[in-house]
Image 1 (cartoon, one colour):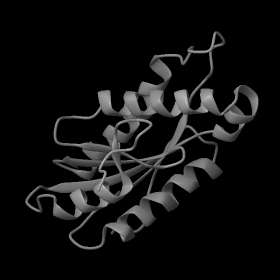
Image 2: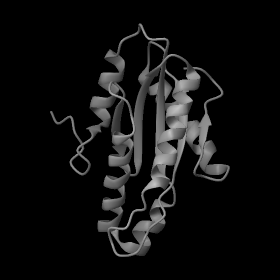
Image 3: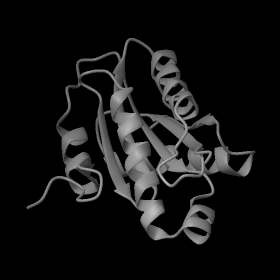
Image 4: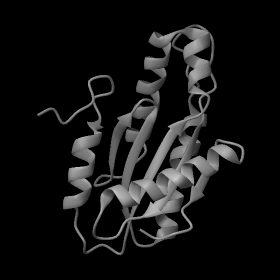
Length: 161
């Protein structure tokens, strides 16, 4: 059974869920972050699906380069990524999401001769022992809140997983 996404080389959804379920429960804070590329349909419609694939690879690479050892990045599907982070506090986890968001601004995507502004919306939820799907759902709702309130931001789940 494959554990990586063929386009990005990141872990895939199935493996991400399994690994998060098996993670150490002895850390102070565990959080799930959902990242979704903003205006991705426009990229595909304007530049083509090949360029869209390059943007997905670019974002995946940026996310992976900007997490700490022990954190995990996966492509969940389409233009959506999941990030598992551990920290001393939920504030640390939120800071990680904010750092990831800002990392997309630092390097312009310019693989097609025309610079493309790439931003993403992030949702974050605390992950407690138990159902990964529930934590992902809460982070996903927070991510949609980020999209619906202007995009290119981090929103926190108002419920705890």
